[in-house]
Figure (cartoon, rainbow, N blue to C red):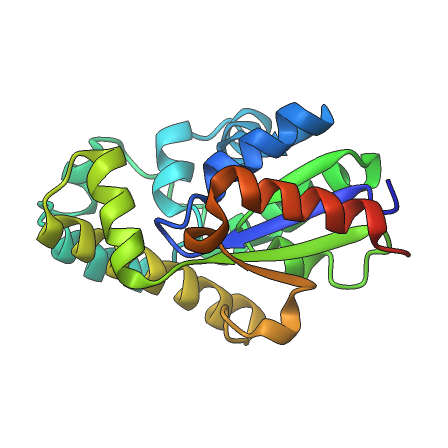
Length: 208
């Protein structure tokens, strides 16, 4: 492989998580997605649920999303006492450090969390963005998460805004800027397996 690390950013409902798992199985590489949450929680002795709740989010934005999803507030939504010392900037630093550590070992797939920004200067890293038209994403979320059309549309809008806000706040950039990626794929055209095939080809053909 010309590249030894892959970052995958994806619009919600474009199949990014499943494509990453497919690639991990084919390549024998470790996939780092929710594994990042578990690792940080273990290392810093923080509730995994709390890290997961804050993951790829900004505090003020969480409160808006809690309202969007109809929850009763942050504490009631997660039913845990949040540690006061862990703020967004600290969590981002932890995440950056872990991504750099993982990338140093190679043979890793990092999903989301600004991985393409953290490893922008890393030789041997391929950065991929997965997208799909809104209606295709709605249909997929309806099927996978058993939601109504309205619920799926609301979930997609909320998650896309969360990811965009995260990148804008901590990396001062537009999450969807194509210049930040080596490869952009419409998963509704190629399907999940086809998208994985394209990424494999890019990994094999790309040069440092």
